[in-house]
Amino acid sequence: MRTTTSRQGPLGRWVALLMLAGAVVYPVEVGHAQAAEPAPPVYVLTSPAAVGFIAFLSVPGKGDLFDVDLRTEVVLPQACGDRLAGVMRRDGGRPEGADVYDVVLERQPVGECKKDATRIGARYTVRLRVPDQATRELTIGPRVLKVVRKGDAITVDGQEPSGDVPGAPPTAPPVLLVAGEVAGVKLKAATPLVGGALAAQLEVTARWPRCAEPPFGLLGHGDASSRFVLDRFVPVARLALDGSCAGAKATGGTVERRDVVRTTVRLPRGAQALEISVGGKKLQVTAGAASSPEVPKGQR
Image (cartoon, rainbow, N blue to C red; front, side, top):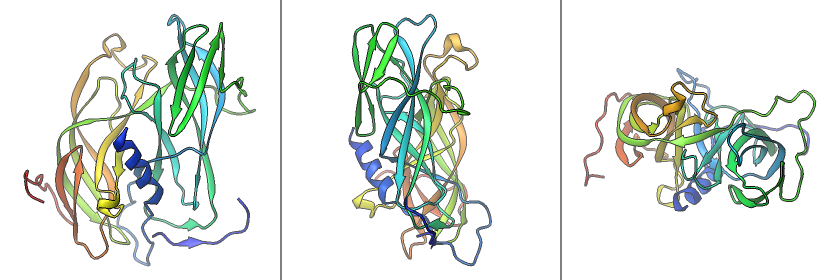
């Protein structure tokens, strides 16, 4: 685990496993030796402690579509410099997908932690369809919110929007996090970090919604079978829903891309390598390896 310093002051199926893994994945210990390069962040699902209703905007010319501005807060056991990366819809980027989201946490795998619990938060805008006089369920992690529309007014769990605090940025356009459908993966390099971790550089070929940005990292998953070591991953990218990408009139469908993605892989204690899967494609991650092939089917 990462070293800690004290300070004064108070303070469906796969998704469930991801959230469990996110709660127990610990940062890597800092030693006297320094890593040759910054450790790439790792991404896991986390559970919100609170979801606040900030504001809403009707989408011009789109009838029953509304952008709902929410503030999501998460409580972490230590202050390690982690931050929220966004919200991911379980149904993917389809405009008519179910309004069920999970919160993605960006974890700093190497560094120093302060021992007190910390609360972090960020604002995200989700777009959903709410017919007049209707009630829609909006799910954020385990929290199910009731969104009600009466004419031009929206309430969430019976509450009106609290409004922006002075100096806060205005309501942002809606952006989703989406996972790529992996067709192939290749390990380009793996650089040792402190504490038995590796900075892995992967070449990932995946199919994405047409307007998704390049992937910014890998969303990790571990469970009891891996002793909660993150060994299953999917690439994750941002997808704007406001039609702002190039060729907005042809945003439907998917496109296949090849991207280089970096993540930190933590080896089990005493291990020299770890077999991981990226979207179901297996490969071995070994320090100093380059262009490692996928593990053939049937081999472990």
